[in-house]
Image (cartoon, rainbow, N blue to C red; front, side):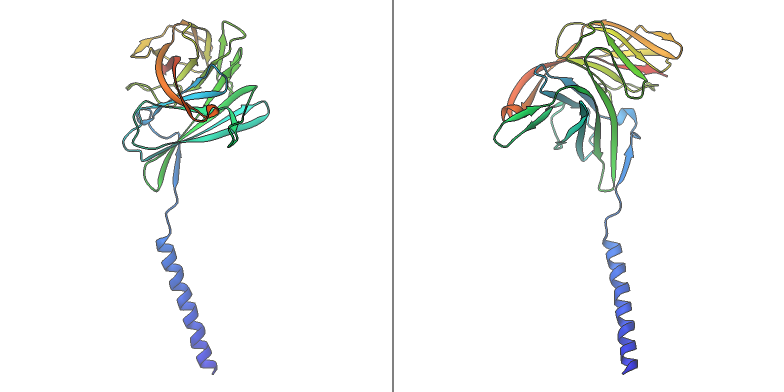
Length: 271
């Protein structure tokens, strides 16, 4: 009797071991998330533009490489003391450049919307799926302009000529709108607007550089700068480049809207 129980006990242990080995072999490998490790020439261009209504943003994405199988963008922003946000998924393949409206608020199923105010700054995480085991994550920041503004790390400031300037956003575009083969000493920075009027003010970046280029909508041009105590100072009084895009309006039950977006930059600080 005891011998038969002992054999049964050993059989159960053996069966449990076999089951464990089978499940281990069939489990999915862990997903690697590589944060800001993607080379600049492989990164998509991600532009964020204000909307004249103040109720949404326009997101423009271009130059998504064919090696990426999926793209999702997580956007967060600070409204007063409240952190808000949402996610945008881009179904690949897609016609580029891709434009999408992003609601600064929320809408009920009945169509009633509420909108956030006192907008301060935000972050963008672009997640690029290569395969089932690898995702490249690009993280960058943006600032809503309502007078002089400073980045949270203190390395960048923008002082518009109009001290009560609104409807501008200053951001890191993650990638570049056109191929560029020189190495950068700082992230590509652009200033976007809702207006075709000149963007005027003083942009200060805590970084040294040998030279600065600026994108004018078609090519990279030399930009006059001043270097002071390890800071790069760019004085602007520049007409923005523009592009016509079409977005959806979540605050208008998904209606389509054609609009023109405006930007100066990105500015490229060269090593």
